[in-house]
Amino acid sequence: MFRRRGSGAGAAGRPSGAGLPSGAPDALTTDALALDGVERSYRRGTTALAPVDLAVPRGRFLAVMGPSGSGKSTLLQCAAGLDRPTSGTVRIGGVDIGALGEAALTRLRRERVGFVFQTHNLVPSLSVLENVCLPLLLAGDPDAGRASRALAAVGLDGRAADRPAELSGGQQQRVAVARALVTSPDVVFADEPTGALDPATAQDVLALLRQAVDRDGHTVVMVTHDPAAAAWADEALFLAGGRVVTRLDRPGAAQVHGIMRNLPRRAA
Ligand code: ADP
Image (cartoon, rainbow, N blue to C red):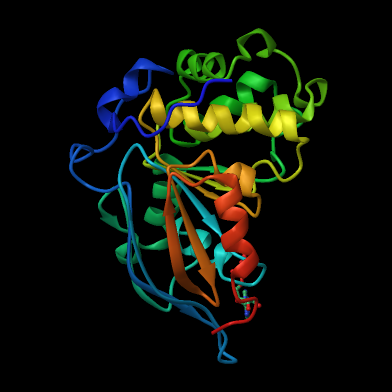
């Protein structure tokens, strides 16, 4: 299995893979994702996320780790525009998403953000190709050729006409990866993308995400509890009690495991 880290190719290298166009005109100069003092608290005084600053350059693969309750989901939801922070600023591809109304935010999420979840959420009645094409359709540009190229990039062009149920769990997750990448988003958020897969299949999916970063200049932010998964990232960020407590460049599974073991379980 190949493993190539952070080429730094960034958006410049993007079109070579799935034949996807680059994003905004400022795509080469802005971070894919930037959080500035992002805090999320709830009415009863729970602080799920203390102020977090984070900049994710284009063409980077970031793993977000931490024990249960440390704020990983909250971070991901705020960063992806699925939840609004109590304070602070989130920028996706340079756009301050807090300044957007609901309709504009929904559109930005559709067109500039990709999602891969633990369960693939494919539409069972649609073919594999139609599933990949869906985000393009929602964006008003149902370009089947583009969807085909995205499907080919995950090695499943031969299964385009099949229904998701005819594919294995790992293949379904690869379709979900193709669907997340097809709009050439600024950021792909992956929430435990390998949580439901066996280790060998998980490796295939992680290799695909790695390839999307290295070959095509995509940016991936992945929440995981698995040190072996985090080891595919360029950087691991560790949360405890809603705070970023440490970061690790070029994380190795053993190192990640060691840090995880020593993280405080309770909120600070
Ligand atoms: P993780 O994903 O790391 O398990 P979460 O982001 O889900 O952590 O949760 C962080 C903290 O915020 C936890 O203490 C959790 O109980 C709290 N929390 C999350 N969502 C809510 C909510 N809707 N209302 C109140 N507290 C919440």
